[in-house]
Length: 310
Image 1: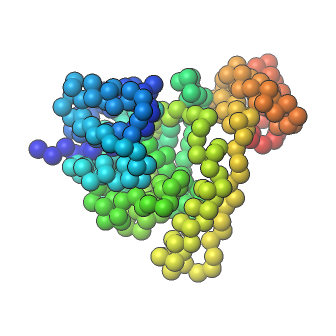
Image 2 (image 1 turned 120 degrees about the horizontal axis):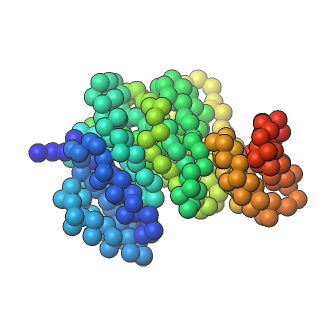
Image 3 (image 1 turned 90 degrees about the horizontal axis):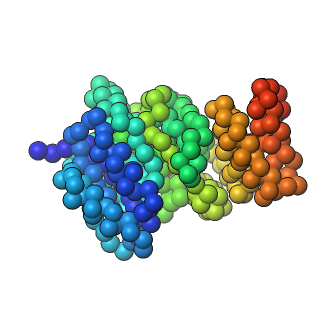
């Protein structure tokens, strides 16, 4: 019998986290799934860990080959998928136990839905909770945000109809590092997209994300995605191309401090504010982050000090 859900996990040098990620899928309350993990040329022990996991559960399918990149890996996994739905997952994230059950129920009840994400809990690289990242919920809000160049579905949280994903041609080469934004826009042209308010994914934030290191490339890619969407949809006028600023290490720490403050964790916010200050001691935003965390620790409302988090 074919599984109802195919979970796709691309893996590249994720030996530190991949066992926990796979384990969170195996512990799902919804059991009718297969897990397709493709090791994209890892040079660490990722493939060894995946192979060992596969020995313990027949629902896991593992493939290893030389590095081809994220888009080729996702399309290869999609070609192997047998489920009615395809769920994405990253090798360093964790699903809550009810994730698939919640998403499958919503998809089953709404035939027009082709993609469904969720809000996410975010942690620092050591797994400490920072707070939550909320996203728009409705098709209209999401499509509007995407046409402004703002990807508003957490990629590792999404579940999609396999036939719809294949109808639009899967992921497109040449649109990385914004391949998810390109996909959301094309899927919204064949059905409806949405997010559920429940935080069904625990996302691990790292210091080596593409926004921090490839912002200029991402800005050019988003420009091409929006230009193509305008042409494909026959929209009038020109898209408003967003500027994607380079994110410094201190900027990343300031953002994490801000998220922790919003989650009422002044001690953790203070830790990351101090890291930001150590990296950029002459940046007033680093001092502002520190003052906000100190004020919050003393019981004062941190929003009394306004300013940009990054």
